[in-house]
Structures are given as structure tokens and as C-alpha cells.
Amino acid sequence: MTAPMRFALVGTGAMGSLHARVISQSSRARLALVVEPRETVGREIADRYGAAWAPDLSDLSGVDAVVIAAPTEFHHGLAEEVLAADKPLLIEKPVCGSLSETEEIVANAEKRRLPLLCGLLERFNPAVLTALALAHRPVHLTVTRHSPYAPRIKTGVAWDLLVHDVDLAIQVFGGQEPATVRGSLGHFHPDSLPGAEDVAEAVLTFGDGGLANVSASRIGQRKVRTLVISEVDRLIEADLIRKDVTIYRHVSLDAATPDGRGYRQQSIMEVPELVSNREPLAAQLDHFLDIVDGRVDLDAERQRILPAHRAVAGVIEDNQR
Image 1 (tube, helix red, strand yellow):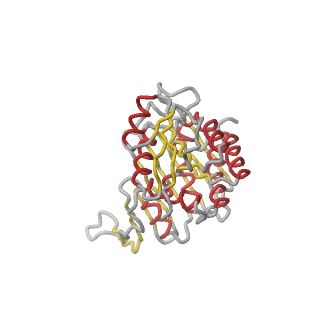
Image 2: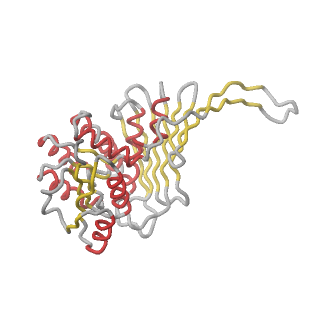
Image 3: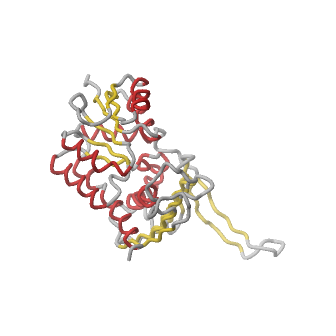
């Protein structure tokens, strides 16, 4: 039996703590090192899962791969250190807070022939996997990702939230890059840093005529995660929080109701069985391990990172003109 892959986890915030749990629960992985400059916090996570603690990345000799779940503003420097140590890297989205830095990391990983996976977690959501399996000829897509305000997030929503759903739009339309990208950004919350937008709206067009509207907000009063795929003769709606999918087909329209007060419409609703029930973070970890093991094309996986990052950069640039 192959020994579990030894992981270093960088960052023990909300996502980092989840990564620590998922790594420790995997039969294919072991949490060997927790890297966190705050010693009390880092040691607490390390002790919980039987790992060592370190304040920095100065010694990665005892690990086989690294997960970076630190704040976005530290991603570029940390990723460079990991790649310089020739370690496969799973990095939370976005890879970096700018397109140029992201391209540097992807190019560096390619040069070193190292596996690199960006944590675009919704790719592994069972509702997304089911909706993608059902879609045949998508023509229009709407994706909504709205959340209440989280002061700990310093990055604007374009990089923090919109990148997820721009990536989903690209996956729905077969992985092709958008032909055009237009967007608008809104700055509203008094506690947001200068230049960190609270709302981002994007319109993407694709070469085959496909159209996508993507909305991200962190001033919502409830959490909304929906993906709606429209085809000419049906609609596929996925709730990414509840992880369920519903298919709608309109079948008839009567001229009027018997009492003459309105119109009668009929639709068929179907609730398909999900193609998977796995926790997305666990499925993502297994996918990363498959890349490292050579079961997935590492070059193709690296290149899947850039289209969504380029599109988000396009939205930001559209508002700087």
C-alpha cells in the first residue's frame, strides 16, 4: 500500500481549518506540518491533528505537497517559496490578487513541471456536477453569489467571489474562454478598504453565441448561491448551498383561465438524482492527489486556472478605463 502523502498546510483561518480536517480524514493524505505565524493558533490546529507546527516555510523537507489557505495578499510570495522547494501546490482561489502574479505562478509551476491546482471549489459541488452532466446545449447562464459582509475579507469581491462563478460559466460552455468580458463594480460598505469593491457584475459572451450573467455581492443580507442554465427548451436550476437541482420544461399556455381573470401556464418539474454526494473539499483533495499521482494531466489542469482569472481581470480593467 502506498504511504499517505505528507501535507503542509499554510494558514489556519476559516478555510485552512477545513483543509486540516479534510486532509486528516483522507486515507491518501496526512497532515504533517501546519505553517502559521501565530503560534498559539497554529499549534492548536497542529496538535488537534497530530502535526508539527512552524512559523514559516523555511523547512519543507518533511512534506510531499502543500496547501496554501492564507489570505490572498500573501499568496504570491508563499507560492513562490513552495515552488522553489519543488513541492506540488494546491492554492486557495484566487491564485493571486492580480492576473500578472497569477500568470507568474502558473508559468513557474509549468517550468518546474509541478502540479498546481487552484481551489475553485464549486467545480466539485454535487449540484454543479449534476447540472453540468445534464446540460446539453446551454445558451444563457445566470450565476448569483451573494453573502453578508465579512470584515476579515480584505480583497474585493471580484477576486474573492466572482472568480468562482466566472469559472463555472466557463465550465458550462465547454471550457472555452469568453469572447468578450464586460463588468461593473460597486463600492458601498464604509468598512471596506479603498479599491475593494463590494459588488461585481459581469456579462460574458462565448464564441458559439452563449451568454452569461454573473453577480457577486458581499452586502447581501442572506447567503445566495444559485446557478441557472437556460437551454431553448428547458431550464436547469442548481442551488449550491442546498446542493439540489431542478429541471423545468414549459409545456403549454392556455389563452385564459375559466373565470377570465388570468392566464394558465403549465410546466413540468423534475428533480434528478445527484451524481455525487461527496463533500466538495474532500473531492477536490482527491483530484489534487490524482494530479500528483499522474492520473490527471497536470499541464491541462494548470491551464484551466487562467481563463477565469483573465476574465475577472477583464472586469476590473473595464472599470479602470
